[in-house]
Length: 167
Image (cartoon, rainbow, N blue to C red):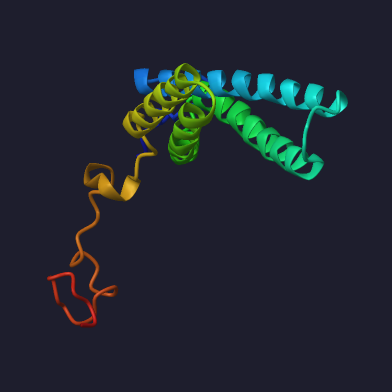
């Protein structure tokens, strides 16, 4: 006799993953950096159109780099707010790169602007470092209780139960 009770199958859910506070802060920092990048792009374009830039090559190179960073910040913002974990390391690196820039701004232009950049960068570094990363399923032994190395002798022909198969 077989049991006719249907086995409940897990249903996929589209429920949003609750964001941690650190992930929300990291996403907000990326959003602020996106807005700042867009503002700087406008300033560069105005300078290029008005022929106020001293070196066209340097200005165009800086503008291209700024566009790449701004688009990446915008993508990271969206992904942070969707609950993704991939922007974690990139946010950390981008904000670490802003620290020397903030020092340059303090030394050459404005102490206040440089300090604002530094504070935003440090908040971004801390938030992205504290944001939860992707869980590694191999670390959670409770989900895989069949990890007994001696359970199947065909996988371990020597009979060694120390886990050092073939050594």
